[in-house]
Length: 254
Length: 254
DNA sequence: TATGTTAGTGGCATAATGCCACTAAATCAA
DNA sequence: TTGATTTAGTGGCATTATGCCACTAACATA
Image (cartoon, rainbow over all chains, first blue to last red; front, side, top):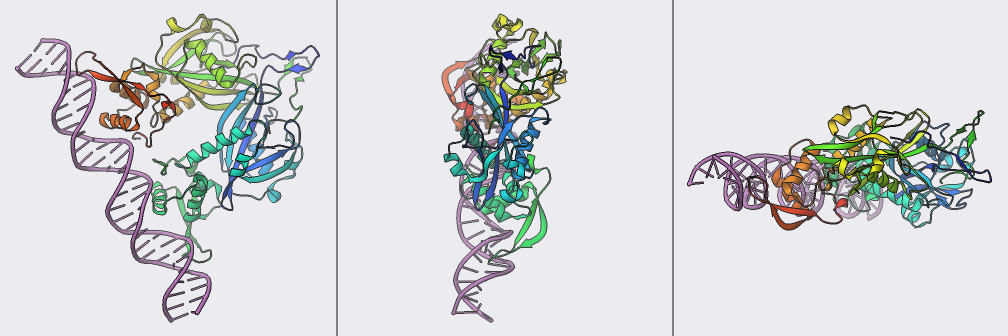
């Protein structure tokens, strides 16, 4: 069952201030991309208390008035910071306890999004730096190389949330097409391979990589070749529709 | 960030009834076991509105006063219905939207638990049939064969939640030791194999199965043999500690 | 003692990946 | 023009975990 009839109560303290029996509910989104050879995550610098001035994952309260679902909340946060939609949005998990927020019991639903790199200045709408429709104002928005983000002390328990999201990504990269959603389309197989390598943190064997993609049939040849600098020109490809749900039968070497 | 300062507001409607800005938060638990050759899930019959009289997954509101975390809420629900702890408890995901509960925006964090069969009459404490510490009274508690549960119309969106949990289990059974947590210990390899087969819904090859376990080194030989009826006596085994997190390098044949 | 039943193993086949050397087609610098 | 360098792409064998199947082992029962 969901809850007892009438069990949701608004307790009011003696001084008249409302006290919550239900926890605060927020959505946080780890937004990841590949840029200049690095895996980067989008961080915002909080402009308001609590944790004012600290770097944090983008996120905020679920607005029951304007969000139809948790996923639409996540999409709203994403669009507010990047100005674009993400081709991959996935729920990581939910963390809820009495101590993660100084003001009491709180709960956050963690998502991660993958997208090709977009410059923030150009793409981010004004709303990302100002308070708007349920949006929190922030001092700054920035793509941060993942290793640095992991070293930075983040607001609340966002360090742990970031680690959780990263673990999920590093695990799924071994048997999915994830990296294809973080680069511009169309792309060459070499670019895609490098995307895998950046996320995995180690080299991938060229032949095995290409054969795997070929047998899976997850790409469409565009027929267009590209040639950058010296070396043989390369064929370009696009992702087949529906590939987000595709899983290879085995993982890349651990 | 988590939320804006002061953004949690208790809106009061004109008639004085409190209206929530924050969603209702619940935890639901799919409790699974193996019994008499079937995969079964524990269902409860709701004794109170809403959805009174309907079958549902055990669960209920998060009690911020007594639960330290979401997981402890899940454990409390589990213990209330079965009287025992589960050796496997895993979060499946969170569903939150405006329409899953007739009374407004609500959110549930779904867990699943795996445990060896326990008879409900004997093991369930009185609290499972009566209202207690934040526990909801139910008309009945029952182990239901999974195929039947899937055919039964459940309260709220519990049909979908059950499907989600089941998909997770059917997927992870292919590369984890999950079934070992649903049978009594120690066990024979034949019993364990049958546990896999029940969940997977198809036969598993004996030699491949045993070799896989042997190479993984996830079991401890007890040294004790058991003999039931005719046939050669079988060695018995226990699960090595820490095996819950173990993943085989490949999946069983899809 | 023969027969049926369940436990457990030997050994080859299969499939996806790892590995490495090779060819192919471009740029660049004498 | 030619050779060196660079990147793209392939051929083919090795490795590894699993699938498959026939075989042996040890018990009960008639």
